[in-house]
Length: 113
Image (cartoon, rainbow, N blue to C red; front, top):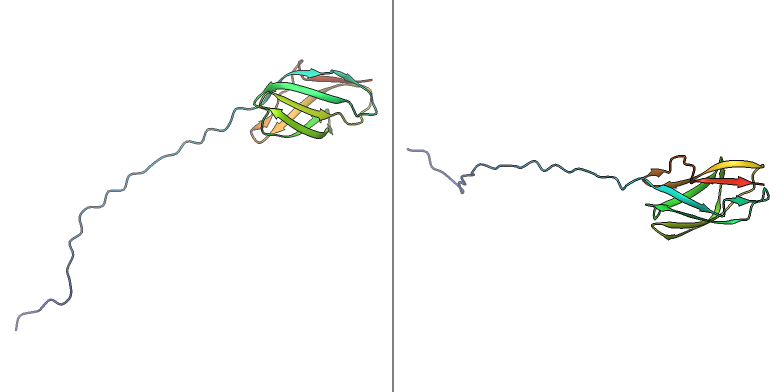
């Protein structure tokens, strides 16, 4: 007796998978172009406006090694922050975003008096 087929037979074609590559482009790093006012008291409390580029993702601002408070992101080009207490001297103002931190710059200096 010949063999019998039971059920259903299916013929599959060739399955071609295409490898899709993705390139992640990080947002540009922030840059400070102006700090105003550039002078404040050692007791802190000065409201400082920071202007620059790519500031919309700001999560912190430091004056030297001390964190500013009450950070407000006004736009992608402007922040307002309150300067902390700090000993007398000139320090770099650094804006930290999810894309990185602003580099040291002569436009990003604040003097505590």
